Structures are given as structure tokens and as C-alpha cells.
Image 1 (tube, one colour):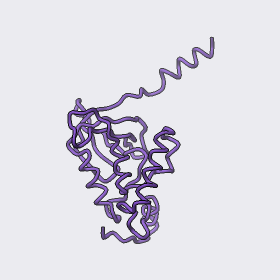
Image 2 (cartoon, rainbow, N blue to C red):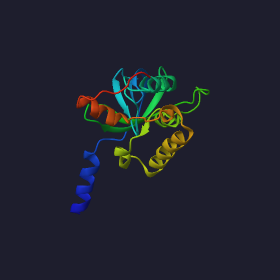
Image 3 (tube, rainbow, N blue to C red):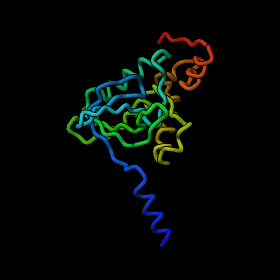
Image 4 (spheres, helix red, strand yellow):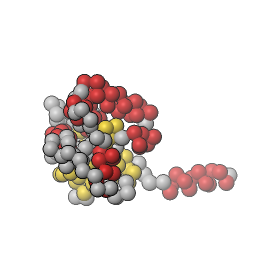
Length: 177
């Protein structure tokens, strides 16, 4: 009996896993967007599973442009309710394919940026992904590397987490792309 009460309490104390639908009204960079929902609430969203180059980093502007092409001004569905340390929702962003606006939201925008070679699979947080997503994202990065797509055409692409760390410690990085 006690176990049933504890289990019931845990079920009601956990946040609900509700998807949010809205329109993307801002694209900060290749892995961060702002979504305006039907109640006119803004949601700052960190795209789950990827880490795109920072805007001042090589390929940062291209990653931002790719994300913009995929989602800006379009209705999207957010899947996920985790918050990062900056208060952003960490979520997958689903959008209708570009050539089929009336279709269901079946395109994973983060995976599309990754497939284009404009982001890394963010392996630091891969345990928060489903096993299927972990496999899909790892495969997409490997394929982009093999094809030398996007940033993988660079001789020595610097992962964003290393670039941010070097900036904090006073190092300089080339930012001409």
C-alpha cells in the first residue's frame, strides 16, 4: 500500500510532458530559437542533441542561416521540457518539410542542421536522448564528416564547447567564416 501511495505521489509531482506548438520568431544561432505560442508566451529553446558553432566562430553564421531557413516564421512543435542552466527549454524542434507546408511536422530541425555538417552531435548530453536519437544523431555526424559537408570541410574544425572554453580563458580563435 505504501508503495502505491509513493508511486502516485511521484506521478503527480513530476512536470507534465506537454508539447508546445508555436511560431519561431527568432533564431539566435544554429542551436537556439525563440518560439511564440498561442498564448503569446515566448519560449527560448536550446535545440536538443546538437551544438552548433557560435556566431563568431567559423561556420557559425552558416549554421544560423541553415536553422533560419528550416524554422523561421514557421509553426513548430517542441518536444521536451528540460531547462538548461540559462533557463532555456531544451527540446527537439519539429517542423513541416519545406516542400510540404500542409504536411505534419516530421522534420527534426536539429538533425537537419547536423546532417548539413553545421553542428556536432552533443555527446556530452547524449544520455538524455532516446537510444534511437543517439544512433540517428551519431550517424548523421559521421556521414557529414565522411562527406566533408559544412564545417567538416575545414582542416581543423573546433567544437563549440572547446571554442567557448578558450574564449573564457583568453584564447583567440579565427572567426572569418
